[in-house]
Length: 549
Image 1 (cartoon, rainbow, N blue to C red):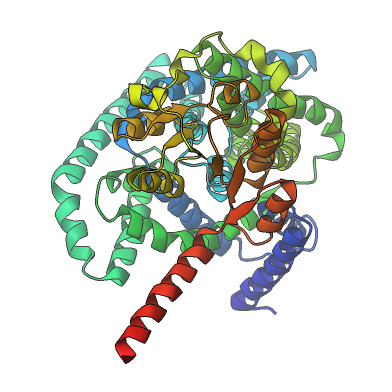
Image 2: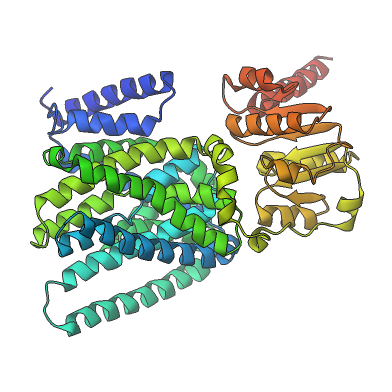
């Protein structure tokens, strides 16, 4: 196949086969795609020749991913997580640069090379992390929103670092000041234009476009890619522009419809990002850098999460929130490799620095993917040793305002997880006269539902100490809508340890999970899709039968 179309068809076929194999082996699919990119790239088989076309599709996929992140962001959440995201992002950048620089100097690296690689170690992959959080349905969780917040801070730091590299070409201080001044006025101009668009332009425009679902999809893609291109032209980045494009539509009534229609397109285009990432990795310099790369990989995998946990613990967050957010910075980004490559172009560092950064990227991206996917069991094992990262009273996650009625009333049902499904379920039971209490790990969600009349407790259902504070002896049923099987397994084990004698009801979202949950001790397993279809069949059957009469 010597045509571009044939090459893309071959890549898609190989990716589909590798993805199916990874699912069979219960391995992360994105790792399989990166491996396919490496195998098909110039380092191994050399199947990829359409680098420009692959890179273009990858860039559009990244733009769509960041657009969807922005469209799901709520201004209320921004106000809540803004301070911690800024403090954690800046703190992690500073500590990683300082400690990484010192570590590289101890390895006898040249000063400028040590500085470049230390800065590269601070950048985490927003694309990979957001994809993993989306797959785990944790984008709307407290740690997910905080993680996205400080990843955006990191993306802004990437822009500043790139501009700083350009300023290093000049010898006078005035050039650096002019670069910073130019960046400042462009940020102010972008904020002003975005405010005007959100207030006066976009609402009527989106209403008009929404008359046709196909036109709404085209408009969303056009708006996201246009602002991504504008962001790059203005000296920011495509990612920042795409994120702001989504954020500008977050307050419209059509954001859920846009998000639903773009999800499939995003997943398809992101395949090319991972293929392109694997194909671009330079494997020629890896052999001589194994030892230093192992040390730096351990620093990134362990040191970066510890830095985040220390900062968040000091700010009043619980150790579980700190660990789950900290794991998202346990890898370096594709921008880290681009950053060091630019240093080679400028003559600041040699090819060995790029080989070292590439190897650290391969190790940390692979290892952190597994750490994030299995974060719940990891927390369960490490929890006793993580108490040093938690204040005696984690005031940022203090129990959300509980109503006196909710405290005095002994519930019949405890509902763990108050997302869209769990919250509606708990409120429906409440309206039906059932004495119910909700439990959620998101303080904002707990406070909101409590204000709407649902007695709600804020806390971690997998924390044995927290479970002791719940009225388990009075409750006859426990319902868990937690999204992960591992999280439900930990909750079931904790309930068993507390001698809960009631009925455990779990919610299953994936095929095959129902049998696992029953084996773990769940007496009843609900499936939202199956149950909704069964209910629809029952209602339609009744209507058809009545119509025949």
